[in-house]
Amino acid sequence: MKKKNKILSFTLLCVLSIALLAACGTAQNEEEAQQGTGGEAPAEKQTLVMGTSADYPPYEFIDTAVSDEIIGFDIDIANYIADRLGFELEVRDMDFNGLVPALTNNRVDFVLAGMTPTPERLENVDFSEIYYVAKQTIVTKEDSGITSLEDLAGKTLGVQLGSIQVGLANDIAEEIGELEIAERNRITDLIQELMTNRIDAAIIEDTVGEGHIAVNPTLTSFPIVEENEAGSAIAFPKGSELTDQFNEVLQEMFENGKMDELILKWFYPEEE
Ligand code: ARG
Image 1 (cartoon, rainbow, N blue to C red):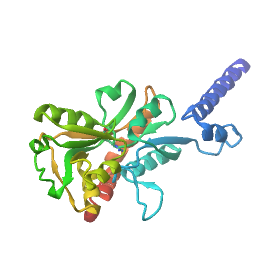
Image 2 (image 1 turned 180 degrees about the horizontal axis):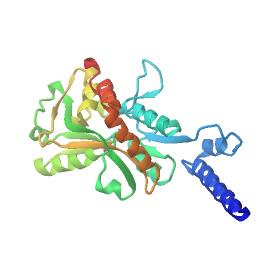
Image 3 (image 1 turned 90 degrees about the horizontal axis):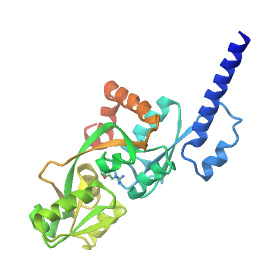
Image 4 (image 1 turned 120 degrees about the horizontal axis):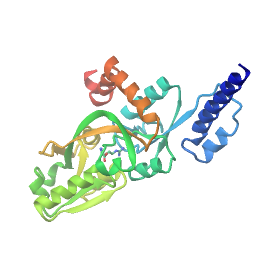
């Protein structure tokens, strides 16, 4: 009996230290290390660090007129899931191209950034179920005369560095011949360069493009004909135990109407 108790408490100790290790082991960085060393506050929730690229309204962006806080569809999803799983959430902004490396270096616990699972990315990270599907469009100045992919011949087409749009741009280049591809870190850079005529067009997904067009009415867009759908999923370091936990909550959100509510809130605000 005594022995059993010992084994039990040893097991408990292991479980506790694993939990502690997991808490400190996730997203190691200077701040976290400082916070994590106390170990004296068992009541405090563990913090999950989320990586994102806050240049992608309505998924994640900063509405500078309101505050410097990152808001959006992905942020609401992350908050809901973190809350359901009993974690605090810290959102960290970085260039889109740095998100997969941040996962592989364990600098973040997960990435929510409208990211599409691709075979290349799947070599380095794991993905949740797809939570939203979008289409790709060409955004251009209204007076650019570009109304079809063929019109892009001889022009400069912008895409976000490290995004699936780079692959799409390469496909288009192959199809139409001469096309210069300009890769930029931020969608906002692409919009700025469109407005100042440094690039002629950019591939941006539908709702994200529409958001920018709403504030820059000299811009317009048309869909890329071959219905290129790009689903978004949550990315995790390979083998992370969070993947299953997040999938369960995603499932719950699909079933209890929370996902629909958030899609309406962020993608169709006027219909709310
Ligand atoms: N869905 C595209 C991809 O995965 C673009 C995502 C860009 N996201 C962002 N937050 N800038 O490559």
